[in-house]
Image (cartoon, rainbow, N blue to C red; front, side, top):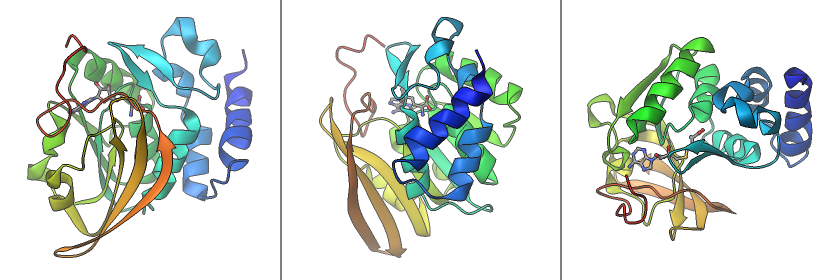
Length: 219
Ligand code: SAH
């Protein structure tokens, strides 16, 4: 299988054709080898238009979702970004190609370990991974120019608003356990936030102190 050709095709048909225009997002998606973030048995599907299982009942997001969320963050090269839900590490790698520094939190240690291996193998040394409850954010490293949450939350944890720099952008799916609305919150001043709805989506639940309980997840 020609992965580079499959990747170009993915970017043209799933990303550009659906309206993503940010050149940094397009370049990052052309560059990052998505198939390396997926177990070997599923690699032939790596550039398909769908999320895929990554073990531990979690998923790597659909490429279009990764592209639109990244575009919605309005990133600049010198930004420091916080990601919640490292999962496979693919979204972290996309961010790492665009910005100076990425901090990412994953609650499942096995996923964090595997993501670290692939991020090192793909030249993403500017990603720092922490194992823990991402609903608390990463207060010691705040403020963040952008925060991206890649699991569905019941409400927006206050910690994220507090840890945004002024001018900072938060992108987060909010709704019930199976379907959500992707929201963007921009911190426009010390105590001012602007909030807008972007698109409907389906993420695995954000589990933690300011998220969902872990019933039914067995972890
Ligand atoms: N960004 C990932 C998507 C992974 S799916 C990728 O590109 O592959 C969402 C991830 O969020 C899962 O790995 C899940 O374990 C993790 N997660 C759920 N609740 C969390 C929490 N409170 N803190 C950190 N990670 C969490």
